[in-house]
Image (tube, rainbow, N blue to C red):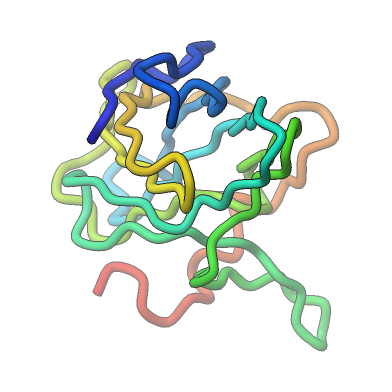
Length: 164
């Protein structure tokens, strides 16, 4: 079962399995025009009394789409890495996917990301199942106050298999 929503400030209400997951403040951006990679950021809320986990992500926008995060190596250099186990979404809480932290990574974009258009993304949760959302492209958006600044502006080139 899939649900299609526009990711802005929309709660999922397509049935009992999805009623407690919300996706807000979502946007997609590329590092620069014509870049072969892009990333999506959002706030995933869980209004249920049970924890859930975002376990995978898919989109026709790129050859590969993965859940990623930034980690600091022994030299203090931020590097991006695939998070195979996914992201925990706490009961009655939220998990923020933000620049410089956890995010959805698009590698080998099939077409350039165009400001104002949307990208279809399917988020798959351990309990809530597959949820399909439309995320607006906003490459002009600036990080929120207090957000890590490394995001799409640094660290992505350090990941050896981007764009392959």
